[in-house]
Image (cartoon, rainbow, N blue to C red; front, side, top):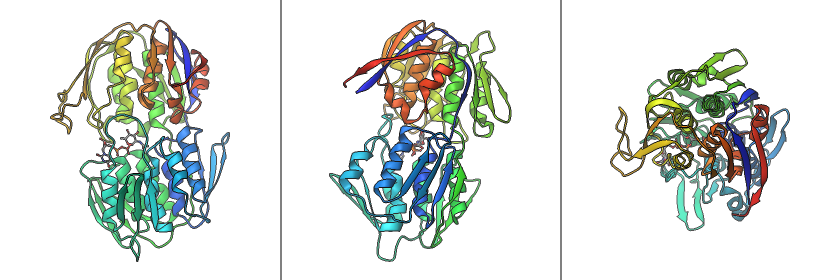
Length: 444
Ligand code: UD1
């Protein structure tokens, strides 16, 4: 079953909304609680599907999870961690990639872990080879079977190791951190990702008793300790959600105050926003994003790992670029297949072409491999309403922005996917005076 949202577009989004903790951090901090010998407390937790899923997975493993939705406070008690039934893990695993990060903590607690078929957004192959190689490098035995991957730790436990990542993968860096903190001896991770969400995970682990240092050259050093305790922490805000609302303000010629948006995590986005012709005011509580009038400007943009322009900011911004004067170029260097969402934008009147070539200063891994990973957007093109289906989380939110910017009534189906990462998004849309209403469900 999937819900259909009726969107009457062509009206600027105006008003105030609040963003809470980052979807790309909170589930990982929840997993980290498994490593402690006492309860943890996490604040600023959003009510999103990925948080529900990880809560359910933790409960399956004996963790007591209590979540006060209104206050956004979650307590996690790992003192009775136990094995879970594989079939139960399997039943939950399909919707996200987070289960893979349970491996290190479970190997330390139970000497075994199991990875079911993984979900997450369909934005490329999304392999797990780095993760499996990392676990092997710590000494774990990794056995791929038809029902999933079975992993066991050797007698004597996991050992510190040296890892060179072929690409600064966020998940692989987190996998290393969550495994190394309690492995015996020192681990050196070279080529690590240093996204703000990873830095906040390091904050959590340090509070728990871990010893971790980060060098300027993407090297992270972890000295394993025998025991970790619970933590108390407030999650960093969701910079992807904040940027998505910022892009929505631009595309609809609106004015949105995003309470909770945090400038230091969004520097690159804000620079780009300004170059496109968007305006913003920053205060201690958040960021006001608005269209200052006049024409938007075209830009050349490349996505990259932090501190570059984040890949998850790309799709919402592309919608705004359809309204910019001239030719914009976007080169996607993180995922090979992240322009599928542009098909619906074309259907709505956008002029977007996608290319296999690297249309950017940095030749990337995808240039020689037939992936449509560069886009040329020619504007401004008025958008008109259409019936569209949400392809994935970020692409889906972009479709929603396009429908809100387009003249006429669009029907957006598959809308439930967006609840994986955007808290109360229809409530927030109404707070911004958007004309949206659910008109039923269809069975897919
Ligand atoms: C995380 C974020 C996602 C964001 C991405 C990059 C979460 C829940 N999701 O995803 O929103 O877009 O970081 O900032 O935090 N790769 C491999 N082998 C692996 C793992 C990754 O080849 O084993 C490749 C991927 O295919 C991709 C690249 O590495 O091309 C980056 O992926 P990665 O940084 O690992 O993304 P995630 O952690 O899955």
